[in-house]
Length: 218
Image (cartoon, rainbow, N blue to C red; front, side, top):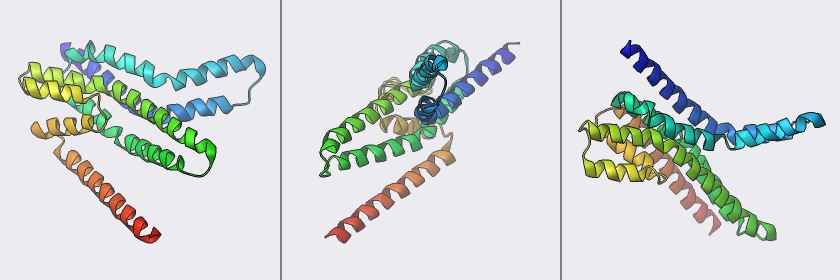
């Protein structure tokens, strides 16, 4: 009976982590799509309410994540918590890369001769940065619950647990810290090394592209 209860709790954690990742990618698109719907006047309030709901859905899920992970999360195994943390953190990597690219493009636009872009570019870059950080905050409970469980079970030391726990609130460092913990536990090694290789290749391609662009201009 207890095993079945634990399995159900684990399944809910996996579902919650997957839903959070998916919502982080599509919430703005869904909200925008709903706003563009041409409905009759009596349905406009419902349309607006749904648009606002989806726009703030990551924040709603953020609160749910903290509640669930610090209640149900305490009752599941450390391995399951690690799986959820890896799923969320690794699943959000492409979103953060896309967000970084968009922020850089917006900042570059602020140097164009078009007057309004001088103000719009930095403003939109700031908005995207805030959205990215809010999404990061919502993903932190999965990692923090895993770190706390690992510390209690003596898998990770106090200093490492505190440092990696704090890093869950800082972009890039949150993913790096989870990678370090997974490698320390000798789990998800192939996936972690594959992601590191892809990120290194992407970084190298960006450097080569930037250098080539500089030589082409000058």
